Image (cartoon, rainbow, N blue to C red):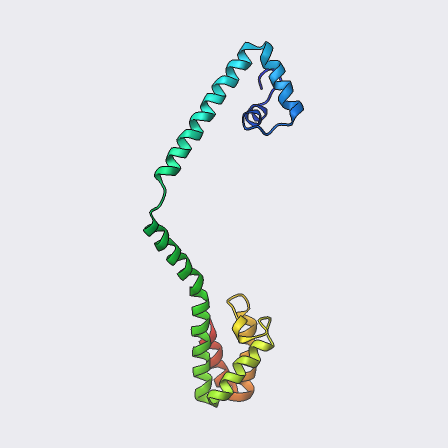
Length: 159
């Protein structure tokens, strides 16, 4: 604290974040106090140098168009990966059930299990609502395929 002003007040003053009254108070004090004026001058110089250095670093770190395209592709792949994993699991479950009760019945069982889960449709099944979906499908498999079939469904549906 210097002459009634905290470091935070000085920083806020330099960044233009104070109210008009607070700015006036500091400026009125600096008009009559050489040490506060000198401190302001030094802080202002340091702040300007930091802004300039930051701008130079940001400019030197600009990625090329090729790097941006690569990064974008990578991000999109990461976003698609969970949906692809879910689809692979759904396909695997349908294949397992189709061997026990037929392709059409297996597809209908998956649709019905999704409808009774928080997903409410097969297209909206995600990793977040997978467990309730799988529990519904396992319950259906018990009736359709017996305990052994349900066990296979449950096991193939686990992450």
